[in-house]
Length: 338
Image (cartoon, rainbow, N blue to C red; front, side, top):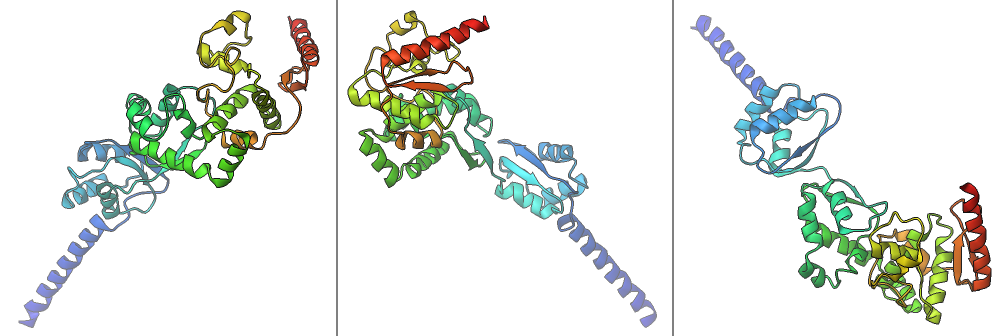
């Protein structure tokens, strides 16, 4: 009997070994090659579509092996949407669990540049999240939500600080707005609120003034000086006479020169007609510019204009006579270019 028993036992052991090897290969053997790819999985993606996307990355080694593992773990109908990172050495079990449990890879949402409208902000956010721009815009213009957070339509832009935020691709617009509100509250700490109070301004008013300063100059060294000019005007009850607010009222940031006819526009943002600050920010200022307002440079300047050197910098004056002389020098420099 030993003559027949040993060969049979060997076959059984070999079969078990092959089965275990097959199971191990299907579940635990690396099935991704070197490199990194990202998959954006939308709602209601089925297994066929997911397999196709995986194959298109070029990272998957054996697609058939992954599909069998996905069927074994009943992945169909349980694929979570998200942004997923596919790296070297991932096995099928890990891949399936990643998609089934929604183990997303976060990425950076950066607010930067000139953001002067909710439409522009919605476009930026939708470019980094699953939601389309219309869905985002509807959230950003939801008056009930804006009111619940303690803002108005005009002041609401103040909560969106220019910065880089780590977010998940599937984050909902409402949740993202609440995240921005938390960042806003964190930014406006006790120290900054105290500085604003000493200026006689609220955090929103500081942000509004910072938005004007941001539009006046690209030079960080000038921001505290320009902020000082406007604060001096506020203190003596002089209109701000800020050209960027006129461009905002006209909804035309491309205007290069403000004319007298532009100053006739009937708008709460016309700081030539209405004293004090406009109702809200005209763009999203960076945290650095907000701090430039809070730490403005104290001086006696009431006016400024572009320098005749045409290098983008400004010259400041404490009286109108001096300012008019500076303005004429600038206009003459412009005329020589024609």
